[in-house]
Amino acid sequence: MGSEPSALNAAWFVIHKARMLRPTTDIELAAHALVSGQLVAFPTETVYGLGADATNADAVSRIYSVKGRPLNHPLIVHIASSELLSSWAKDIPEYALKLADSFWPGPMTLILKRTELAKDFITGAQESVGVRVPSHPVAQELLRRFTELGGLGVAAPSANQFGRVSTTSSAAVMEDLAGLMRGGDLILEGEDSEIGIESTIIDCTASLPSILRPGAITKEMIRKVTGLEVSEGLSRVRVSGSMEKHYSPMAKVMLDLEAVPGDGLIALSDVVTPAGVIRLCEPSSIEEYASQLYSSLRLADQLKLKRVVAISPKGEGLALAIRNRLAKASAD
Ligand code: TXA
Ligand code: MG
Image 1 (cartoon, protein in one colour):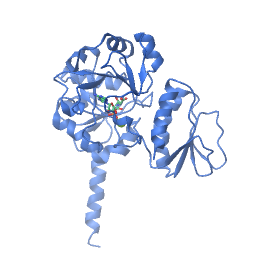
Image 2 (cartoon, rainbow, N blue to C red):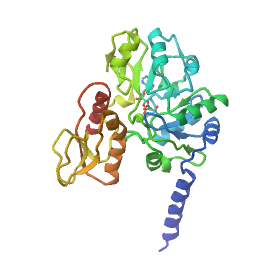
Image 3 (cartoon, rainbow, N blue to C red):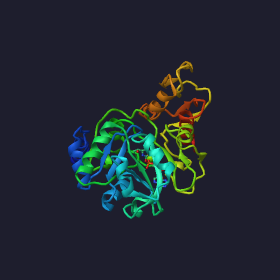
Image 4 (tube, rainbow, N blue to C red):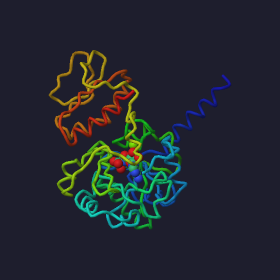
C-alpha cells in the first residue's frame, strides 16, 4: 500500500517526460537547441540521427551516454553543404571532391584527414573524420539554420540505443530514446527516412577509395565517378557498424530458412507467406526492401516474436548493403 504513491509518481514522471519529448516540427527551435548544447534527434534520408553541436564536448558526451555507446567509436559530422568541408577536413584528394560533387547532399559519408576542429571526442582519437551532407529536407533546413546561427557541424550517430536497430521514423525514435533524453532535448519530426539503411562510408585517406560500410551509393557508382578501383572492407579505421553483432532486434533473426508458424517473415513480395507465418513486409523492389527493413525488425519486437526469417535479396549494389545489415542482425 505504502509504495503506491511513489509508483504513481514514477509513472507520472515517465509520462510527463515522454510528453515533454513529444516530436516537434519546429526546426527553428531545434537549431537553437543544438546551439545551446541540447540533443536533437532529426530525420535524414538514410536513418534518423541523434545530433549535438560537433564542437561542444559536453553535448557530444551526452550522445554517448544516451545511446550507451562505447566512447572510442567515432561520430559522423553532418554539415549543411560542401562549403563547410574544409573546416573539418584537409588534404582532400581529388577523387573525394568528385564524390562530394556527385553524391552530396545524399547517403554518403567520406572519411578524410581531420583538421584541428575535429577533436578526439568526435574522431575517437583517430587522425580522420567522417563527414556527410544529408539530403532530407528537414535535415537540410536544420543544418542551414544551425550554420546561420554560427554552428559548424552536427555530430550524429543513428538515433537508437547502441547495438539495436536504427530508427527510420520519429515514432521509432520516441520508442527507443525518449525515455533516455531530457527536457530541452528534442525529437524533430519529418517524412520517414526514404532510403532506410545507413550511408555508404568511403575511406578517402588513401590513394584509392575504399568502402567501409556499404549503402545506397554503390561501388559501381563510386567507380564511375572517380574512374578508380574501389576496394571493400579493408578497413584500417574503426567503424562501430563493422562489429559483427549490430542492428539487432530482440527477436532471433535467421537467414534464408523455411519460416514455420509463429515466425515473422521479411522477404520480397514474390516470396509466398507460409500458413501461420506473420508477414512483416512485402517489398516489391530492392529500394522498398531497404526502406522497410528496420521498421519490420522493430515491428517483430512490438509483436514479441521470438524468431524472424529474412530472405536475402540477390544482386549487387543496394542488395549487398541489405545483406550486410541482415548478416549483422542475425549474428549471435
Ligand atoms: O546514414 C548514416 O550514416 C547515419 C545518419 C544519421 O547520418 N549515421 C550513422 O551513424 O549511421 P553511426 O554512428 O550509427 O555510424 C557511423 C559509422 C560508425 O560505424 C563509425 O565508426 C563510423 O561511421 N565513423 C565515423 N567516423 C569515422 C572515422 N573517422 N573513421 C572511421 N569510421 C568512422
Ligand atoms: Mg548506428
